[in-house]
Image (cartoon, rainbow, N blue to C red):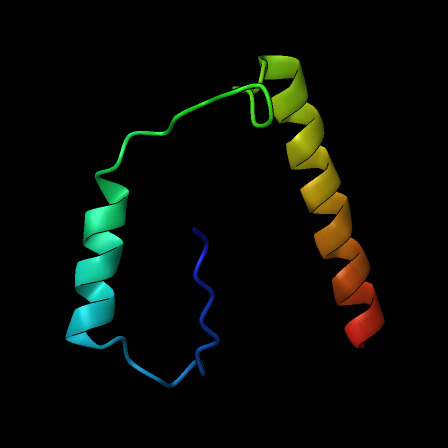
Length: 62
């Protein structure tokens, strides 16, 4: 299950949130047919797409 929270940049994490993050960080990633492990080529393409998306966002903020 995915849980989303929106934080203000000045807001500090609660102890409960820190505990949740620590707990989740220790869980092993499980790959399946719906979310396979990325090959190096797929990972490179994903990073490039994210970089282009971020560049586009910065250009539209100005």
